[in-house]
Image (tube, rainbow over all chains, first blue to last red; front, side, top):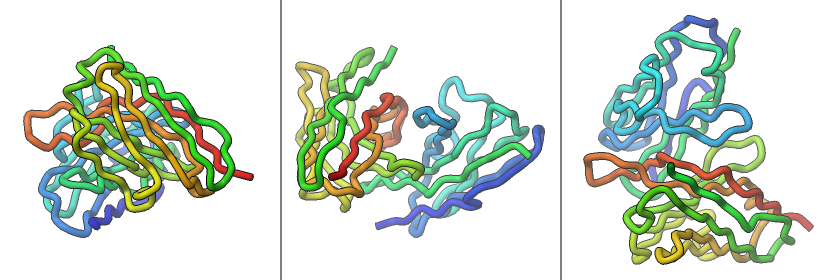
Length: 107
Length: 123
């Protein structure tokens, strides 16, 4: 099975900073990658699919890139409401594996 | 408005069984694959199972294969998860999640999630 590895596992940044989270697949998955945000005590929320397509209603400060095995989620200007854990998920085939998550906090 | 409402969680002893339900509304349920995803306390997300729009095809994570069965009743707009031979490591919030919408043929990401139902396996 393909493994999904996220880095870092946690980060702390200041409001307004550019934040980058990486997700690596153990085998190529084309662009079949989604990103989710889970704020404390809430359900996950879809941010991006097809590696770079922003889900409707998601702020434009979020962006995704990558293809094959290496993917990136970028928050261009970190806001207090972005405090959350972020997960990548591959969906080219079953199992539909999630990465381990990246916890984002405000410094 | 899409709504997914899980029910059926609770406390069960190791080796026991439980049946979860997910009532769907606000979209054409019979047109979409549906999933179960779980999250152990303080841990990350784990995909559990998927069923295609008609119910003819199902897939499972290795961790639950042979113990869990996903099914659906399109006449009732309801998704189910029958969980047998439960173990302590099955303790988690179980979410049902709708397959996403996209222009391609593979849209197996999750665009709507229910609020989840807690399953606790303990003696």
